Image 1 (tube, helix red, strand yellow):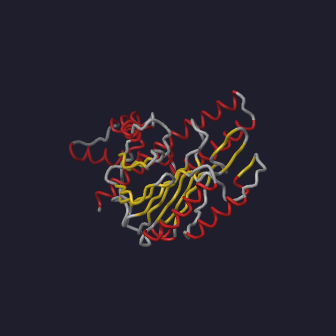
Image 2 (cartoon, one colour; image 1 turned 135 degrees about the vertical axis):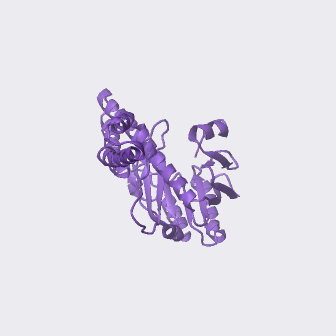
Image 3 (tube, rainbow, N blue to C red; image 1 turned 30 degrees about the vertical axis):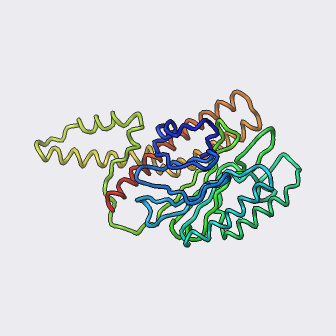
Length: 314
């Protein structure tokens, strides 16, 4: 996180629902983690904060490096050297590094300027190669930064080979810009799982966010069963389980697929607004943003609940 504001980690911690763990030497990089997780700083500098991340969700520690690069090529050379040092101390642990690198990697990462940045691109590419890092790809907008008609992909995420073995899938999504000229980057990693038996019924917290949920449960529960005592209770529980499963499939479907579809819609709306900044296109874009935020909160509820169940199981 790049706050660029008066340091007040407690306020951000309350807003995010996460614990503040560290900031780098110049206060431009902050790290927050969920309850039960930890981040121990191993290297702190102006352009990168590097540390060891542990969580009950993960079977081994991981190394995380957060970048906020300087604006000039000479200053960034210090960052490239620092990146080359990190793999020597990671003990082959999974490593992810990401943030604002303040430079592009290819000519496709920039539109709106003819400035020659070939030397800077070579510096960045050589650092990535020396560190044996992999770009997992991305979806969303092609660019993460925009100003005065210039669009660039300055923010990115890179991982090493052990990281790809730890997770079954890695998805990097470039989110829309809101109050900044940078768009945030969301990284989601899917843990490898082993097949198990039939799925048990689990109440999903995300259901409570839907306006129809309370009435649905009330009407189904109050419907007569023509039975009494424990038999009555058993029938009602069995019936509400089937009702909620059917309702979940019809209304929510696959929440991750819905979120991907929303991301595509919001990217289209953003592109339409940038091409034609009319009141109508702004309204369409804002509507897509509201829908996306709601879906994002639902997915957050889903992962929080799943993580809690996994923790209890272990």
